[in-house]
Length: 422
Image 1 (cartoon, rainbow, N blue to C red):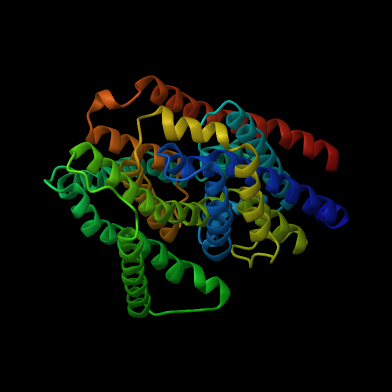
Image 2: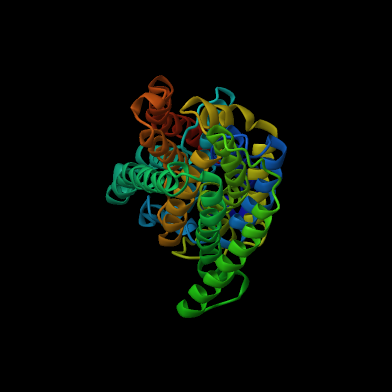
């Protein structure tokens, strides 16, 4: 049966690359729209600016730090031993999974549903493996751990967002001089955002391009970058033209202008973190196909990524956001709760922190659920009445549908591809 892989190798890799690009496109349309939605929804940046930020930082995150999560998606969910005798089944299954998850994401994005790309691809892989091969081929313990992370990570990001927004309220909004305190404290929040993003770049990203730092050097460099960002932020904020009216409402408006500057930082942070974590959903199955076909059927536990795979994922993500991301942005940025730059900052930085931690540990979490959890955390800080529970209910229902939808489509496509190639 290995002859099938050798004979049809170029075709299989080409098809997998096309479907991998579709999957990345769906991630951009759905998940990146989530990541940018808080910034756009709070009017801190325009859609055009969001796309430019995503182009730079999503691609950088995917290319520099995207290799860390790939092995979990590829080897952690299904047992490679079940495919040793028939490696072509793994290839067919991964191609079917990419197509199934990609189609589901395009449909969900068209409907404005912020679904989980991780749910989509994991459901698709479980579907073909359990039905097309054997239920024992699925490592259910690993799947349980991933499902557990879908519950834990929204709770973590929601808690971090709640604490962050409460600190903003206490240090800035609930004081006698909100504007002066904003100028004093916002650079510290900027430093925190800069520290998180630079730390993941140094510790997880640069090793992929051959640059290595010790832990002490990494933390030292991240701290230096954070201080530099704080200084630059302080200079930029001091140059903002703002009215010094005694009216408290005018002061609040000026404070939000200061946070709008900070939102650009957190948007960059979220885009980078998202690129590093969620590109694995598209390139993991693609990398598995290329590895198995190129080796003539050998299923290696680890293999180097081919040079073109990460750029393919990065470009697909950016194009999906630019062409099709507006509807999901509307849902996440405006429909769950009313976001201002200060609230959006708390939600985005909390989500970015959670995603960065997960990316570093190799756990393929759902960025969608992490960000929704963070937005809910900000809403809860203002009281339950501030949250549109109808929208939240619809989002949760779409999450529940996603797993079986990915699995069902994947099973159908698996048997179709198996029938075509034999």
